[in-house]
Image (tube, rainbow, N blue to C red):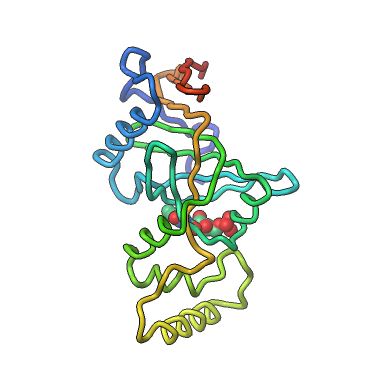
Length: 215
Ligand SMILES: Cc1cc2nc3c(=O)[nH]c(=O)nc-3n(C[C@H](O)[C@H](O)[C@H](O)COP(=O)(O)O)c2cc1C
């Protein structure tokens, strides 16, 4: 290692987040920040990539990176395999947390809430706009299960290609979307000397309460 971990740090100077500029409602602020990220972040950063944390039946946390694929007034939608490890965890505990990190903007957003499956119609609609390779992969890959080697995966894909030689693949029953319904959304803007801005929105019965958290 050329630089010691203890010496690795950046000062954040790009922007601030004040109550005066932040809307009363967090979805609007997320949309603004997401647009900023789409315009500002450069590859290899994927603005819609986020870390999703789930908890298993023993209370142990697990997290992995996923892509956000839809956002509406209900919540944040991602797609995955309904037989995967994360699916089993969401079955045991239907709550999750997601974190977006946009490094060029020095911004983080944390979202927490209950998770539900989206309708079959929504999963079908998204499945159909995926590239063919991804649609076949959803059938072929037993996500999160142990496979013998790479050759087994390629064999599973070849079998799937044979199966759908004469017909377009339809959405597998073991694949689809989940929607996180936020109860808390926190917007973090890096500031100099670690005096960061944190605005936290908590869902009340009919609207949102906004509060500032210490960094
Ligand atoms: C940039 C990136 C994007 C990803 N997007 C997805 C996704 O949208 N859906 C998905 O199921 N897995 C996605 N993955 C793979 C997951 O991180 C993970 O390996 C997979 O979902 C299995 O997780 P699990 O075993 O905890 O269920 C992505 C990984 C990376 C690095």
